Amino acid sequence: MNADLIFNYFTTLTEVQKQHFRDLEAFYQDWNKKINVVSRKDIDELYLRHVLHSLGIAKIQSFNEGAEILDVGTGGGFPGIPLAILFPEVQFTLVDAIGKKIKVVQEVVDGLQLENVTAIHSRVEDIDGQFDFIVSRAVAAMPTFVHWTRGKIKKDPAHERKNGIFYLKGGDLTEELKDYKTVQIFDLKDYFQEDFFKTKKVVYLPQKFRG
Image 1 (tube, helix red, strand yellow):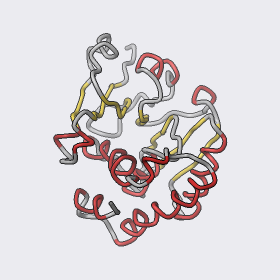
Image 2 (image 1 turned 30 degrees about the horizontal axis):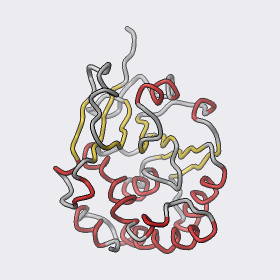
Image 3 (image 1 turned 120 degrees about the vertical axis):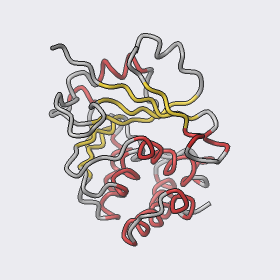
């Protein structure tokens, strides 16, 4: 499985974007031999399980030029790096508390010459600044994640959708999300036909503010 999988679903990519997506595999294959940043069983399905999965967020929300996005617990750079390729006019900050993972992220970013990505080795609680949206791939249960990211979301929206969190999750989320009355859940099987996405979802939690 190669980058054509991405091109089938995102048909307006520039040649530069297409080349960035093609180059991802070689970078991750190389770094995975040194640091096991992507599970060995997943590396052969990088475009399905990591790149296209990350881009599921883009099927729900397009980010406007100048937007600022925070990727929490980015691991090897997902969903941040694929989204940064797709939205070159948007600024992405990728954060992870594990130094070796951020090292890989920085090497991939440098290799692709992505100028819209900042990689930071830190806990999210220690990050300064605020962002339009926070994205992540299931690094914790939603209540924990909301606690970690409190105060990190800008109050004034620059998109039609309110600022908030986009979370890639799978399985039954009923119990985890029962206390969030404004949450929206999008099934990725409605956007991607591969079996991998049958139980995968994008969870959108708009930020609440006291008046």
